[in-house]
Length: 389
Ligand code: CAA
Image (cartoon, rainbow, N blue to C red; front, top):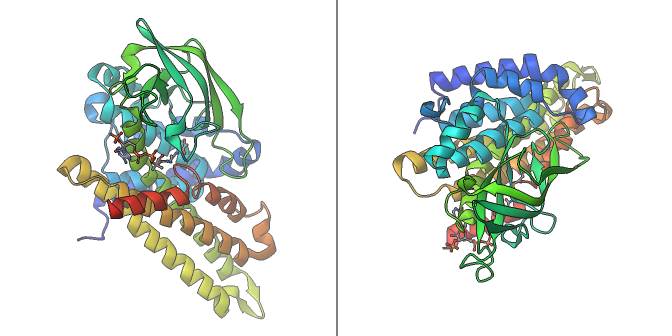
């Protein structure tokens, strides 16, 4: 067991931290206020090679080890959690799912453009009536010669308005399991934004991660060529769950970055702000807060990196699935981000409640890490099932 980062992991952290502080930070507050996605910031980040960090070199990527992938999302989110999730969804839920389940033609067609950042990726599973209970989706696909025709409305799609390609799930009518199993017929499709019958729906007005766009997708007789079926027809639910096993580590890393950013802002303030003749960091109550914030953040970090390690062992060494580790990391890091951001606001007092300091944004941004890619309640369901089966 070795807890030290490799030279390469440390170098990646330094590069991403520098990028986040010099490129993302200056526009983060304004983008948050305006609900404007970091499209140009993403392009700049892609130019450094990170858009392809889950894609093999053979397809134009620069595949990083899984702990490095978590470090990248953590460092972006330490400054700008909206950019963090934009990247996490692009590299995890979209690109990695095509790497794992795509055929050669699909990989050749999509991965190089996802790796270069020419295309932005998204993932679309949820609907108004099926978030937690993903198998209850109502979007349908019907066979029509060389196409499937998709109808329905998807919801809560991160990168919805700016993505070019979506890994999207719908049930194929007439599949042998359709109507027999709850997830019967669920199939994964690669959908391009320009496909006939595809439109972007309502953009959500959100409490946090406001610079990350979240939209509905409208499928109105959307024609998807059969060559864009990802994996086998009817095997899409397992693909969706596998994608979440991978990407929940990304959300855990986002939460970790939020906790780290909020803690650092509170520490800086506590060392500068004086009351009763000394910096507030020297008052025992504030010192205790800082101690707990740092300790909880470090504990979450260990679980996030361990989950990333388990994921790598699963794919490279054939080790058992990393479902348990991913959900434990997401559960712990999400709660940690919320707790630490809450206490950061408390340390800053009235100033923490204003937009003059970043902690109010971290506080708002933290909440979603307890909700998306599976609520904390669902993480406990997944963990309990893994422990008891
Ligand atoms: N990997 C592979 N296969 C899996 C799997 C996994 N981790 N988990 C389940 N499966 C398979 C099962 O083996 C089973 O396969 P068979 O049909 O062959 O038997 C099938 O999937 C059904 O499994 P379950 O019976 O366990 O399914 P369920 O209906 O009880 O649901 C659940 C399980 C864990 C509750 C699941 O619905 C779930 O994770 N819900 C939360 C959904 C979620 O996280 N949504 C977030 C969407 S993305 C997002 O947030 C937006 C964004 O862009 C950031």
